[in-house]
Image 1 (cartoon, rainbow, N blue to C red):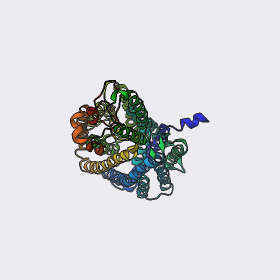
Image 2 (image 1 turned 135 degrees about the vertical axis):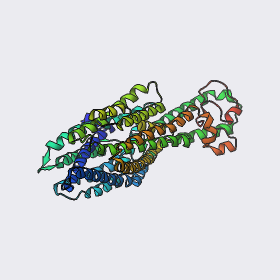
Image 3 (image 1 turned 60 degrees about the horizontal axis):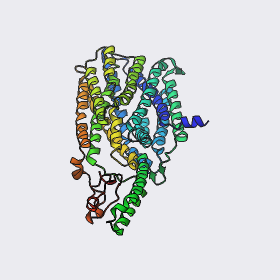
Image 4 (image 1 turned 90 degrees about the vertical axis):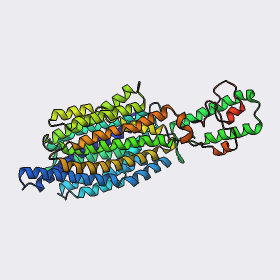
Length: 512
């Protein structure tokens, strides 16, 4: 019993159940929209019918994705902030409950032959509960809080690995189950029912299985690094007491102020880390650009495979989705292997190049085997976004993970919505003459996303060059009055009072 409780307390289990449910639902929804479009334009000629069906499918997904993403913006921020203040589980459980309710309703659309426009209401309901934006912000905040800075990139990519493997399994199975599993001769109803069952289990595991981090209190969350800061501060105080006789020139008033300031630092669970806003904004920019190219291309790709020259059926759609999810595995292995020699920024650039090259090859796809070759070249395409979150988390306080990740997810959602609208319109306008224009554009945007990461690498490699201009000191009163601040006495070298007052002593807990 204890083993089961421990197993379901891992965030990866919730991610797996949710992704299997999502993969089954996505295949079922695509096939449902395709069948309804076929019946609507059945009386047209073959060529006209195919074009009209394709345009109808593209128009449906454009509206559906916009409603789903735009409606989730405000709930994502509110849930992320509430998760920081109260409990991380809120940011996970509420969106999963919305998934369970909204994605159970399409079962009635199939069984009672309701209009396809009812699906827009389910998308709106899903978005108002937070949707995938709030859910993934919660997943990443939960995983970040449970990891150290050294292992954070691997931990966040491990969550994406669990997502990819489970979604790949669901995609492979969904194509076959869609054909053979029926309820009352309604194709797709059985798949919707299976999807609802998995959503129920994912919600149950998140509600009863996940345990709030022991570092999270009623007043907010205390991250792992906060505890390390507290332990390090206590060691600093012990070292201060040992070296105190060597610094007898300090008067009692200065020592008392230093001890009081040290106690105040220990009482601050979030630490006192100065935040370089530009260094945080640059990864945001890179992530948004990458999301523009990535999301827009994948939205078009799901429709591109249904028309000539590929013209896939449900089975091949399942295989195609499975190859996309297999990239989760290769991306995780890439992080595990190459993180021994490469830094986070290098991994991000490697992933962006992998995606851009794969999309460039996708622009020339005319046969099924070439599609899989292009997918194979994108083996590291999922490294950038989780690693960007890792870079950002190392620049901010751990008590604001939920809010910052929610803000990032909101920007990514807006970027994905804009990309979906733009890329669908571009594809609809060029699908007859130049259907690959969207893939060319995606490849170019992916390359542009590398530029901000180059500046991030420069700033992180040479922090003194930007320290005085970008990072404002957090203890202005102490600097104005030339008061000493709490110091780190790990070195046995005797320090002069002037050095300590100027804040240049090595190891100062307030130095950036």
